[in-house]
Length: 188
Image 1 (cartoon, rainbow, N blue to C red):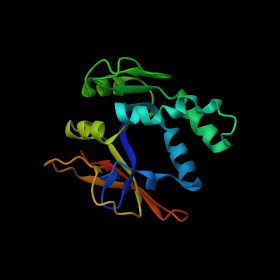
Image 2: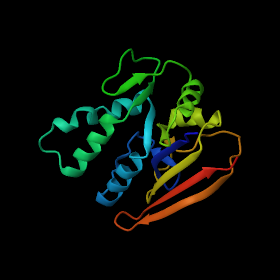
Image 3: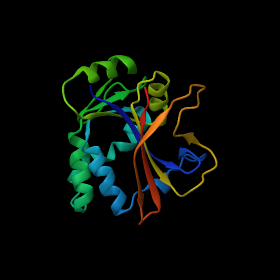
Image 4: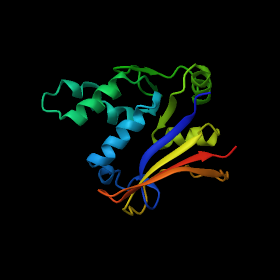
């Protein structure tokens, strides 16, 4: 069965965006960018909410930019080819290799898990990930922890009263950015 992962950059105090909505401190250096690109190669479908979808729209046409460097071109090609499911109550259409969700988050994930293959189902965006976590649908949390305290904002982990036990699968320190990566599997 395909697993569901939630992977984002996060501040040391647990936020993916600060109280001002900014997340510029998550911009990856070359080493981290390669890592994120490689991690994305494992994804078979990406589930995202409207805000993240709109943020990522740039990459749908970035390959047409002749000034794009090789690493960004590779990422853009990977992203545009990746099937995406967008959860939105306001959008009526989406671009590129995306479709609007036709069912609930639980229904979409159950259908996708049943499909053959060993690629992951990635959930992107804190709001959608919080919904997936509340429904106990996330199998792995992958946090790229940046050495910054932002003091509030959009939390990486959902704020609920449910305990979730985790098992460390992998960790890595990136020397160039002082960022630390943690990969935890949900213990069931």
